[in-house]
Structure formats: structure tokens, C-alpha cells
Amino acid sequence: MTNARLSLGSSWLLFPVSWAILLFLIFPTVVVVVLSFSPSIFLDFPPKSLSLKWFYELADDPSWLNSGLFSLKIAFLTTIVSLIAGTAAAIAVVRSNLPGKQLFMACVLIPLIVPHIVVAIAVYLQFAQLGLVGNTLGFVLVHAALTVPYVILMVSAALQRLPVTYEMAALNLGATRQQCFRKITLPLITPAVLGSGVLVFVTSFDESVVSYFLSGVTQKTITRRLFEEIDYNISPIIAAASTAFIIITVGLMAMLTIFRRRES
Image (cartoon, rainbow, N blue to C red; front, side, top):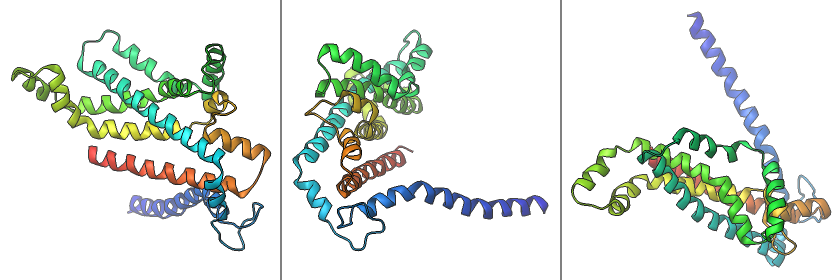
């Protein structure tokens, strides 16, 4: 009886504490979204009225549009490169007798552990000599290096849950390894591949530290542009850009949740 009362008391305490933590975390985001609908030229919270003025300003400013499209382009290309490289690596790790698998998987985690500021400085020093600062290729190479581990981990987990007997049966019936992968393995791991692709896209699109170092004078990501505007020109257009940024990110994370549910 005493344990039951303690459990009941703990649940009643946990509920308001959890909501308080959640509200504390999302409150800054709510403030930014509300500020984006303010007609004032200053960051005035709460706004006296609501307006779409700054969203129109954002849509009419080619520099903001170019930064947003550049970030989307990098994220899209990074997703393609990471999915191809990560899926191939996951299959090699799970479905082959690759020597040094444990060492390979340990190395895979390095980009997830090393602080991005360290990566940014090292990459900038190397890419500046190779002429890869401020162009698409440089961004895609670095972002792919940072996001391939997500694909390897997620696809490897899906492959480990997939019985190898399915593939062996297809091979015994005369299918080639390419046909087996295309018609058996890939369809069964598609939810994991798509889910990891969404995660890679979000990670690349949201990445700010490395992008700040690699952005050039003309080719700037949306995160670099936000940093510059905060430093030199505080206006509600920053809130409007942030709101658009939030909508894209939340939408992609919702897609990731859907893929995970289908996978399970």
C-alpha cells in the first residue's frame, strides 16, 4: 500500500514537472514565432497587432531567398551522397565478413563525438588551400562526413533485424546479388533508409557552425545569414526567417517520426 501511494504521488509530481520543463524549452520558439507576425520595425513582444509584413519582406528579399535555396540545395545533395555511402557501408558491415568491423563502427561514431567547432577549423584550413570554401562541393563533402554515421547506424539496425534467410533464398533461386538487393533487401529496409535520409536532410539544413566557417561572400547558408543579421541588423525579418526555418524543420521531423512508426 505504501509503495502504491508513493508511486501515485510520484506520478502526480512528475506530470507538472514534465510540463514545466517542456514549456521552458519551447517558450523561446513560441516567442520567435509570435514576433514574426508583428508589424513593428522593432522586436516588440507581445505585438500590438498581427501582420504578415515581414514574411512578404522575406519573400521579396533575393539575398534571403538565395541563402534558403542554397541551404536546401546543400541538404538535398548531402542526403543523396550520405544515403548511397551510408547504405553501402551498412551492408558491408552487417552482411559481409569485413575485417575490423568493431574498429570501423568505432570510427563511424567519431563525427558524432568531435565538436563541430573543431571540425570547422580543421576543414577550413584544408579547404581554403583547395579552393573549396564557399562552394557547393565543399559544403556537401563536409556535411556528408558529418551525416553518414546516422545512415550507417539506422540502416545497420534495420539489416540486423532482417533475417538473412530471405536473401539466401533469393540467391538459391538464381537471383544475382544485385537483384537480391534491389528486390529483397532494399524494399525491406526502405523505411530505415528514408528515415535516415530525413534525419540527414534536417541535420545538414540546420548545421550552423561548420557552415559559418565555409560560407563565402556570395554563397551563404541560411544559418550563416541568420548569424549575420543578428550581429548587424536586428529586425523582425529575422523572426520571420526563423519561423520559416522552424516550419521546415518540424515538418521534416514529423516525416521522420512517420517513417520510424512504419519501420516498427
